[in-house]
Image 1: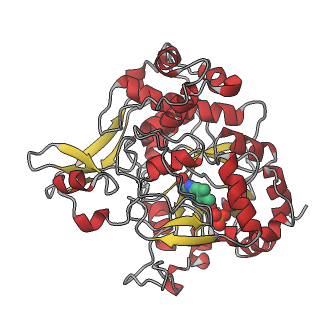
Image 2: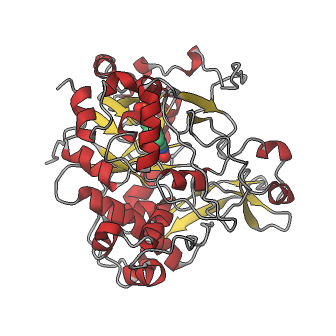
Image 3: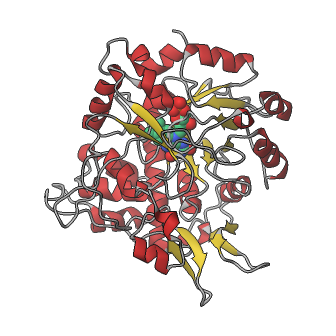
Length: 472
Ligand SMILES: Cc1cc2nc3c(=O)[nH]c(=O)nc-3n(C[C@H](O)[C@H](O)[C@H](O)COP(=O)(O)O)c2cc1C
């Protein structure tokens, strides 16, 4: 007999890095909807929280439950500082991810994802999801397996074509090895590279199967949904249909690129998703991007959607991971209609348009940041002339990028999102010159009209967002 599990009306969209961490996802799940943690860069988040003394003890409480013996102890020994770092001490870094990394490095990523899902699920029975970016390829397998060890219920993945992920979830549910294609620039015709992860290498031999989470790709064209529904290597359980007003990364417009006077990409009719085609696929779907009003929820249901995915409204609630000072500052400006949300086609090293919030005290008048690449989540792999695989990011120091065969034009306007997104959540790296890494806040266009929702409030909880959307 199959059990029918009710699908959520509202998905709280995954927001990286750790804007949607366990606290937000847990609050949303307790309120009866789908809370989603962002799985991006959680290994760095974990080791920084530990270096800051693990206030509240949450990391350590969850780490104790990690099923692979010795891993948590090793990580604590290396990174935990009981009283927190000295104010003038930079964070210790972890080795950047590569095609092949040590067992210990994989285990750190598994542990970090396990911890976040464990905490998001603690003390209630609501479902919890994890969001990963297909483009941040290298840590994804270890992240997924770690999240599955903690019983993650949904996997949501955008920024790429995650055709092989259903098969990965099927394999990991049985602790089997998963191998997926690895994007490497400059491979010769017929040549291929792979990413592989073997649970047995980590001693997972007890054989008790894991729950196979539902898989929801995030797409911005019905054609991609059709491809995934028909050609993925396993079950796809539904889709999030995301439009270009959404916070975070957006899909680029189709056709010849055109830009408005502010340099933003211009979207047109061709970028609208054909909802009739979505309905024809017969799978549940959720509408995302400017969908955070009761009216838009009603429209979505009338169009045959199961519900909506919302990010921006949740990004500013009490439980979100944004640094409290930054959150307050942005909200105060937004309440007075003094924020601009710009779709920046250059900022993200991924090459996708990225939404950037601008406001009077956003720090953009600071001197330009000196380029440095020490987190490396957005590095892309390329084949060197000697045949070896190496890594480069267009936001790294220009001379390094060009030495690695990248073009100067590619580096223009690129921002180090890795360091900025950690600054957004209050974990900025401290540099030798005494400066801390600058923040770069992303939100959807809805931030410009958040004053309607705020109605004079200066703070609100995740449950308030849900109550508002459901018209309660
Ligand atoms: C601060 C922030 C960070 C985000 N980060 C991610 C991310 O890491 N991965 C992802 O798939 N979507 C990300 N998103 C998009 C959300 O998951 C969601 O789809 C989107 O915010 C919905 O549109 P809305 O902003 O109009 O509510 C982010 C959105 C925001 C506001």
